[in-house]
Length: 336
Image (cartoon, rainbow, N blue to C red; front, side):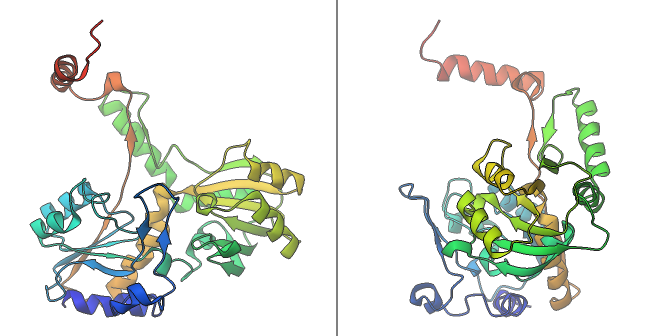
């Protein structure tokens, strides 16, 4: 199978949302070609679902599904024979390739890269299912904001309380194993203060208790631009909402969203973070690819797991000595 055939596969998986003609980038015909901008000078990015860069006539040898393309991912691909990376999140020159041009880095290892993001959002109810509800309403641009996803759903039969949601997440994400891995690393590196992105951002109840009943869930993603005003509007549209569920990103207890939820008499719970989205979106995509791709093409998952280590505990003594030497001789200019 060639890279160009994968364009058709992804177009089929997404129901026709992928760019199959370069004219789609400029004509506005594809609603999933969007520009994301915070109005920070020079930092806008255009999402172009489909083949971002690569040789369309190259034979596919091994495919990696990832959430975000990074220079570490490119190096891992080069070292393990992966020549196609399908990233969920949008790809930007230099930002996703170690500060150098994307073309130069990918050409080094003959890697083709695809992205999907908004073209994949809303295709399946997986993230809702994982969190214990079935949506009866969905909007992937609530308030007219592209990517501002909102679901309203009824809880599944086995989910009666906020505690049931937390228990469900811990079981589905196999958090016991994640905690065992983190515990083993703390022992191995003799650092009790090590933390990681999987176990540090767990489900959390901000309004209500584990015994608080749940029936109708408003499922939001705070980092997409969902505001307290949006919450008030959604509650007026669906008065039966009793619980706000924030996933992928979360809010603090003193946020405007939590204050508005309290004013409206709602529960508020935070679920899985971005660190676990590879399970929610990446894994289903990988299984869909397995259905379409020939069996001799291996499919792997590139999982990003970030670890935090206190400065005093990071690295061997030899590398610490190196870092201190460099610092003292080249980086400190106000000698004390």
